[in-house]
Structures are given as C-alpha cells and as structure tokens.
Length: 118
Image (cartoon, rainbow, N blue to C red):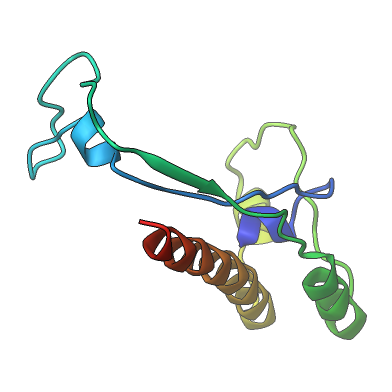
C-alpha cells in the first residue's frame, strides 16, 4: 500500500491468481527447490483480473489530510532527515491498509472464480 500511495506516477496494478504451480516447481517445506528444471505434465490455471484503481482512495485521503509525499529515484543517504521523512502517520497507515485490502479482495475474487471453474 505504501509504494502505491507514494508513487509519483499512477500505478497500474493487474492481479493474477494461479493454481498448480506447486507441481511445476516442487519445493521442500523449507522452500528449497527440489528440481533445477520445471516439471511438465501439470495442470496449471492462471486467472488474470481487471486493473485495480486506487485514485479514489488517494484523492479522498489527500482531500482530508493534504498531499502525500512522493518518492523519487534519487538515492537516499540514510540521514536522519531521510529516515524521518518516510515515517508514516497513522492516517497514512490507514490508507495503506485500504489499498492493500482492495488488492486482497480482488485476489480472493479470482481465487473463488478459479475454484468454481475446476
């Protein structure tokens, strides 16, 4: 949510949900990959959703709390000023949560659609 909220450009977010990849690249419980090459013969489903928009959430936040800081590609030198500049307010944290919740809801919608089509 934070990266989207403070992006200097409009973010294009397109969710996707997949099933069956665990058979293509099997892993141990530790996350270690069992085989160097992907395995064939698996049924993989990929469902791509529509674009997720956040402008309404960001505009609402800015109309109440003022403009959000926007990050740049300029490197930080790690100074106290730089670190303090990116500490989030409680209101910003609420915005991040709302952005993240919107993404989560869309992913859950895709998961439900995928389960119905099995």
